[in-house]
Image 1 (cartoon, rainbow, N blue to C red):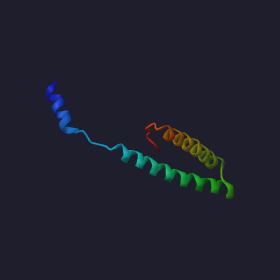
Image 2: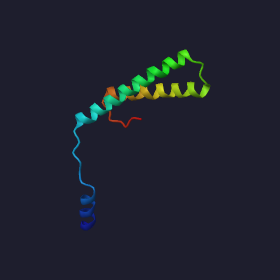
Image 3: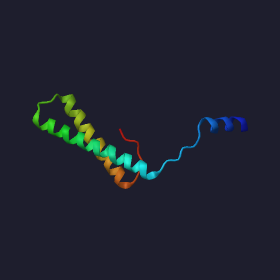
Image 4: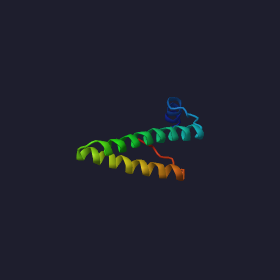
Length: 80
């Protein structure tokens, strides 16, 4: 068992991750999603879109809202 743990730890060393980097990365991704959501809303108002496209935009808005609410609560989530 010790040999297995030795080779496991050697193959997969621990990686130090700073929490501030994770938060900055998450915030950056939320900003990108916000810009995309605004673009989709403009397209929805201007163009005559298919039903599938409208459903996609609505689903995107629901997911975006959920992600923003969880980020406000400080829950670490994997996004998009």
